[in-house]
Image 1 (cartoon, one colour):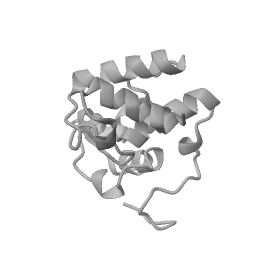
Image 2 (cartoon, helix red, strand yellow):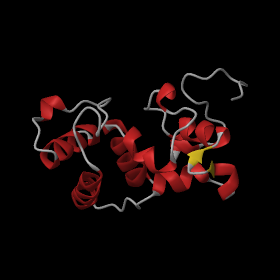
Image 3 (tube, one colour):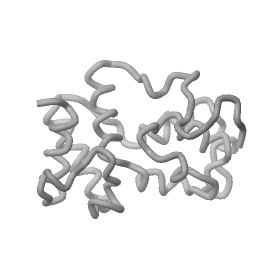
Length: 146
């Protein structure tokens, strides 16, 4: 069974859904009805099933990268630079969903099934392919600025 199929099965089980309802591009909150508490359960199940560790807040930490707190967010909202980095980090999320006004606390609302599959694959392989500094955000032309 491929990693993505196992992740789908785990998410379906955690959310009491039929696995056929869980697709790679399904947004966990909007499409599958997950709540924030469900993320902890899903992460625990993934860690146990794959023998890995998925650090809480990892996506936010990686999105922040070398940015200072002020460069990352102002009044709880992501800055243009933070939005650009998050688009690179989460290529599976439609770039339009990662836009101006996004609150730091709302980053988990972007998570898709593919987000978790990618995180598991990265832990298993020991790589961070989506976090390469020269990666282009999805939906952005090379050299464009926010």
